[in-house]
Every structure is written in structure tokens, then in C-alpha cells.
Length: 356
Image (cartoon, rainbow, N blue to C red; front, side):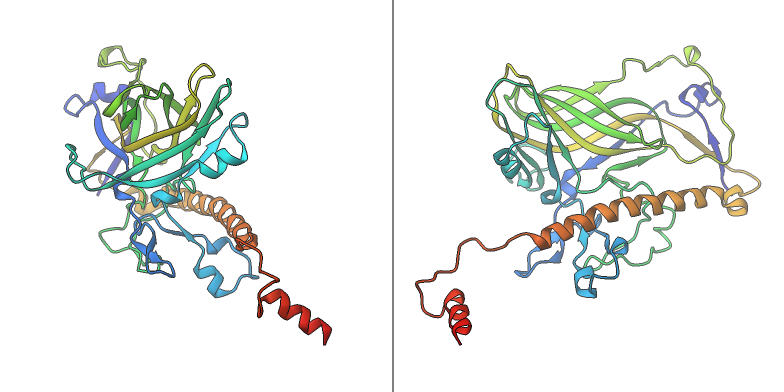
């Protein structure tokens, strides 16, 4: 039997034996290697832990073969760079991208030999403010249940150990049971750019906030840290708020991306950045203890709410990805024209058929 107590950080006054804050990895980019869904050359294209099938939102006009290709994941090359209007032009959009950047085995860091996120942003060379958002290919899902994926990216049924857990927890962009944020840390490699770095987070109310981590005007690996200026460490001075024990959705935060801002007075053109992970320190929102009656098993209110939220998330996610798939299918794939001066070319064959 489990009891769930929903408390703000202030109610820690009533639970002095509990730790004040907890550290968790929000997202670790070394975990996002492509390892499943091979292309025609046998190279993996998706990340098995985070692969999502959006064919559930596709209409009946698509064939089963087309629907089998409708998958995406948080594999690093899938991430996107969104430029603001003053920075967006054909060249900037074409060359701004995210890649998997291998760290040398000889590097003096614990993650040597792994891939981290590598980002290239092409900012304007003229004097104007500009910014770029580095975002995942889809909004990280808060209620997607944890399960394994096969070699084709198809999700299987959750095992008994996986039931009650969520797909994007444990370093894949989601942390549950988050009360007040105390600190945020980003492990990044600076290259003496004067640009500022922000972390973008969204909470369970759908509110997105950005946190200034500082500038990137340094060389080498460094941990940038944001500390909550309104965090109250003294329990006795906190405002005490007591909420009903059941039912309330479990508070969470999820990673929405980075934002890099370039001031008009600073150098433009190419920006290169590398990111290893994002961590948070936070107060727990929920304390668990034994209870005589299992409320959720009896009423199932939280489960129904989370199922409705999950269906809503999948609908929005799927529609966006299907539209991208359609656009990709409509794109021209030819790099050059077919020569009219060579025998047997398509254009000559068509002209011969027309003459007949």
C-alpha cells in the first residue's frame, strides 16, 4: 500500500528527516546515439530508447509501407535549430544543424569516447540581435509509458518492471516529482564566443520558462550553473501550503531545448557549441509513506487524467510529424538535369516515344 502526500517545499517543516533537495540528470546527450532503424546502407538512424511511431496520426491514404517509415527519435542528428526572424535566411537555415560530435578517447573527461551534442548556428554578419533555439524533433512526452523497441523501432508491451515508469525519464528529458527548482547546471564546451546560453524548461502546467546560464566566453569544458535567487533555504521562513493528498497529477519538468543569443555588437557568422548534459537540483514535490488504502487502485483518477494527457500529446506530436513526412516526400531528389546530348538518356527516350 502506498500513500501520496502532495506538499510544497515549505511543508518540509513537517518532515525534518527528509533531504532538502535532490539532484537528477534531466537529459544526457551521450545516451542519444542512433542504434536502431537501419537505412538502406545498414546504418542506424534512430535512438531505440526514444523512438516514437507517429503513423497513428496518419490518415488512411498512406500505405502500410509508408506508415512503417513514420518514426523519429531524439537521436542527435534529428534535433533542429530554429532561428528568429532577423537571423533567418536561406544560407543560415541550410547550414545551421545539430550533429553527434565524438569526444576523443584521449580527452581528460569521464565521457571520453562518447558522442555529445554538436551545434552549428550561422548568425547574421551584420549588426542586429539574433537568437537560435536548439530543440528536439518533437516535444518530449511526459506520459509515454516505458517499453523496449525492436530493431525496426516498434515498441513492445511494457514488462512488469517497466510498468508505472515513463519513457523519457532517467536522462532522456523528463524528471518527475519536481517541486521548487534550486539550481540548473549545463556541461558545455566553450570556444570563446560572447553569446549567452539559456536553458528552456516546461512544467506540468504547460508553462515554458528560460533560465540564463551565462555566456560562452571561455575555452574548454565547463559547468555553467543557474541558482534560483528566490530559493529559501531556511525552513522556518518558508510559506506553508498544504494540498489535498489525492488526487493531483505528479509535478514534473521536461527539457525544451537551448537558446543561444547573439548581441548586435558581437561577432556574427558561425557559432559552434558542444553540450554533454543538463542537471537540476530541486525540492521533492511528493513524499511517499504507507497508507491503509490504495487510493489509485480504488478510484483510478490519476491514471485516467494521465491517459487523456498522453492521448493529447500523441495527437499533437503525430500531426506535426506527418506533415513533415508529406513535405519530405514532395521534395525534389534530383541533383542535376538529365543530359539531352547522351544516347539513351530519359529525355531522348521520351522524345523518341513522342515521335512514334
